[in-house]
Amino acid sequence: MMIAMGHTRHRVGRTARLGVAAAVAVLAAGCSDGGPPDDEETPTPESAALRVQTVTGGERLDETTRTEIEGAVGEVLSDYVLEGFLGEFPRQDFVRAFEDFTSVAARKATRHIDYLTAATARDATDMRATELDARLSFLDQAGEVHGATATVHFAFEATMEDGSTRPLTLDGRFLLDADEGTWSVFGYDVRFDNGDESSAEAEGGGS
Image (cartoon, rainbow, N blue to C red):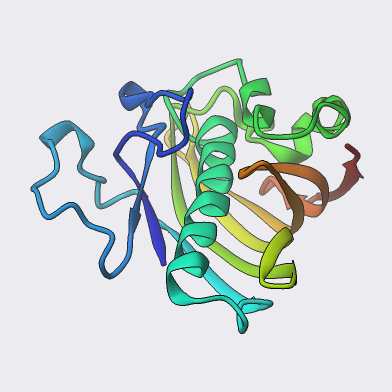
């Protein structure tokens, strides 16, 4: 499954932020509405799509259920990437990346904002995603999925004021659970490299 920037979200109560390509569309067999996308919603060639793949825990799920859950988790990850790393640069606000985190996880994440977002490259003039891969493992019981682990490799390229480019990479995992069909990140364990020959690890979470 691939998730690209472009359309409104499927969950009630959330709106698309098309000005900064902040909404998502699930691009998978059978999921297209068949109509051509609006010009402003077409992903640019410079922007990598999020690739979501279930590696464990989906064996007992039917294809429709698995696709729906992959899409829901993929939307949470997409919102995180869009608010934490993409959009218009230079920029100062990165806290919205944690909107789909639980309250405890979000509070901890704000303390790790330099390791969970592109805040250290806030002065960049442009940012693009080069690789967005997520491998999902689901925890299910009696055919019902209760939680997921997303092992991710996210890579970006920042263009700085002097025209130079800087790579940013985030590797690790995000822990998610579902409450009445709404998925949230309740934990994370990641390693971040902002391209200045140093890296940092961040771990946190809670309900």
